[in-house]
Length: 276
Ligand SMILES: [Zn+2]
Image (cartoon, rainbow, N blue to C red):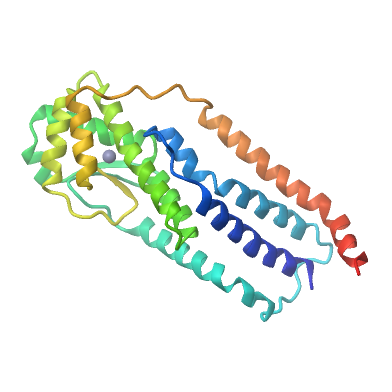
């Protein structure tokens, strides 16, 4: 078996299985904190991605370069290939879909806030400022891109239900965190955001696109309105690490895994060749 073929098989079977395995075992975050929920969503991706880059390094170290791949051996990868193809197709569709609803933020690269004329006509000036502050918070945090990535990651673990629960728990925490951010704005009265949420809910149609819609869940709506009216909003905890620190950590892990795969490639192959 050619080393690239072995690497391809190992990447799909190894990373795919690891993502499913860790994905099935990771519970949603216990607290309603957005950052803990976000980390919980990404936890299963860390071991799977590490293994992926080890095998990429392993394949790149092949002195012979890519050769013909035997289609028959790749049959084993079919279950994962189906899930990955479905996930990619859904991600592609979501990135082109038009957002919708009374108030939403869309745009994976440049998030833009959109309000329907119907909603603008219905809201008082204070309510309108509150809604814009909430949507601006989504735009500032690049939430459409984050929602899109989390949907892709959840789809890569299809048909497990645990990843879907982690995704929903994060999305709920996300809305509460953006409400808190809007409520802290000096020009916004939290009560205005609460009444705007109720007015918006009557206009909501189910959202399909990769965007952050203002309100689309009855229980969540109740919680959000209650928190805003009782000033239950919480100040986000100090970030344990800045996003740049996390990016640097992820890059180090990626490069480290790749280098390990590359360096360990020759001893591993000779070990396999020498084994009975
Ligand atoms: Zn929102």
